Each structure stands twice: as structure tokens, then as C-alpha cells.
Amino acid sequence: MSLNASSCASAINTAANNSYASYPSSTFPTAFATAYKNYSQAGALSGGGGVAGTEVDSIISGYLSSFTSDTNEDDFAQMLADYWSTCLLTPSAGSISVTNNAASKVSAFRSAILASITTTESTPYYLNFITNIENVVKTIVWTCVKPIPLPPTMETVT
Image (tube, rainbow, N blue to C red):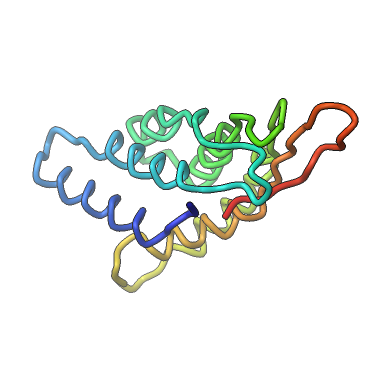
């Protein structure tokens, strides 16, 4: 499988609409986190060295639940880096461990967030945002360690 920004944007839009319907009781943080986790779990590493199963969606729902007027794009970027640092870390295809450099992508995530802020409305909603974030995700490098004597492989997500 691979990442699908359109599907994720649609799921998040549905989550937003359902949340508006349940106001003032908001289900949006959990629904957004679930939609985004499903999206990230559809990603596949280029060499198959790691698979889904380690994603911590409470990083997303916790962030959205604690959102205040003091929360800014730096906080959002840090949350995305923290979340992606938990993704696709289950070893497979002969790997014995998998790590990634998502923690180093805070600045890139911040730029993607800022690039998503516009003064015009476009549909489908959230697609531009998810696409911009996905462009950063595709620069994350996963290091898949193989048993000796094989060297580690560097992989990216699709």
C-alpha cells in the first residue's frame, strides 16, 4: 500500500463534520488522530524493512485536545515530528531493528504547515495540508538494521 492524501483528507473532513454536529462535545481530536493513523499505517517503506504497528496516535489526539490560543505552528510541527518518529518501526523483511530521523524534521513540518495556510477556501478540505505534510514525510529516512553481515538499508516511505 502507499500513503493516500485524498483518502486522509476525506476522513478528516468527515471527522470535522461529525464533530461540528456533536458540538459542544468535540470528537474531533480522536477522530482526526484515527484518520491520520490509518493514513500513516498505509505507508510502505521502499525496501520493506519496517511496517506499521508502532504508531502512537495519542500524540495527535493529545495535542489537539490541549490546543489553545497559545498553541502555534511550532507546537504543531513538533507534534508531527514526534508522531512520525513512532511510525513504521516494526521490523520486517529480515530487519532486526528500525529507526528513523523524523525528529530532525520539525523545521520542515513547520514550513509545510505555514505553506498550507491560505486566505482562500479550496476543496477537498485538508488535501493541501495533508499533501504538504506528506512531502515532508517522504524525506524521512528509516534505517533498517539487518543481521550481520548485511549492512543497514536506508528506506523512505511511499
